[in-house]
Image (cartoon, rainbow, N blue to C red; front, side, top):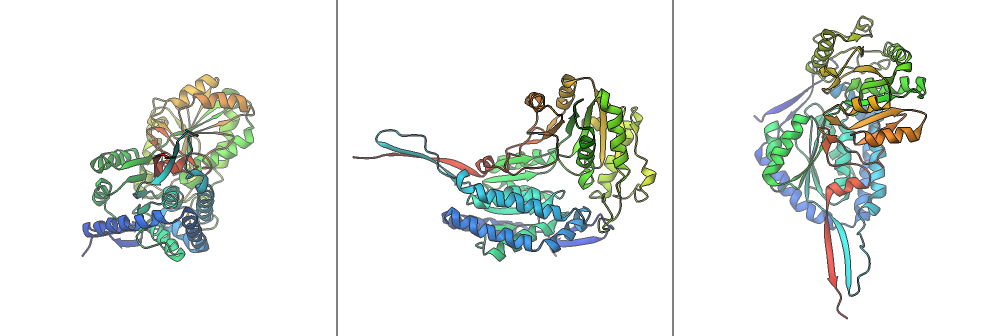
Length: 463
């Protein structure tokens, strides 16, 4: 009997999906098919590739009514929020399709008498995408679709928590008529995922996950010299300046902290507030936090679902308890959330104050609905504290002064800086991180550079 993987639903603790794991022979067959199919796929004109992949997006979106509840069952997002993932998938996919011709156009370095010179962007070959469960389609589409647009073949390994997502990708591509072998998925153990990434036939790995997982990817790809794009953790900060629109900042940052039960790499985890606004800001966040409805994600009234598993909830509870022992105060009454119970993945939102950077909750990633808030005296202190982190994915500034915000942004060690918003990926902008948040880039025209290589043509023309 082949080994199997089980998806335990955070909704009720039952097995929701069970699938056999691919063995060594299946990995070998998938790589062989991918290599053979990629050569022919790369020869298909770009306009034909994008037209076919556009039909695949159509097919995927047409199944949104079935896809949304699967997200809720697999990882716990409230059913009322799950359709947003399909909309985000479509937005990113259609954008990447729309800019492909320009992004992949040959570069002309200028005239040189007697010569024709150009730089083409050519596909890497076979790309492995290792995708997480927290935004299972949004994270995967960032790499899967542009890799295919650029002429690569793709092997997708999705999280054990969200295996149906890989299968839904495959169904959409099959419905659109994508040639066999150009896209494949494999359900794999950790050991066999490492084996796949180490294979010399693989050209690149696109990984989204933990810092520890990123280190494992780097070690594995060193064996076969595949490139690696890594989107890892975050401890994303926000700064509310004294001139900010207080109501807007409260509403936006509360949502940024608690949406998706706080399970977002770019969710807001620490907030620095100009001292004159601190009391009113905290009061507003606590009031909104108490309005969340924690419960089954299948209940239309629920606005805060469970985290992905009980162990994840206990990790957040442990971080909060540690901060309280060190002098922090919690301001949301968990008793107002009857579903929140130890030993379950159901976790009440939490706001902490009287925190400082000696506490792990201000330094280590918190993958759950807990946010810590500190007052600051000025921009300089805010920048220093925002940069006091091993992570650098996004940061948010709330201010009425765009010039001042840009001056702050220039000093922040992050891949993205927001003004008066947070926790959103614009597909026209490069998605990237620094420090322990990763390396490489997805989305935007720049994202295609990670999935292709430059090839120079230097022709001497005889006259």
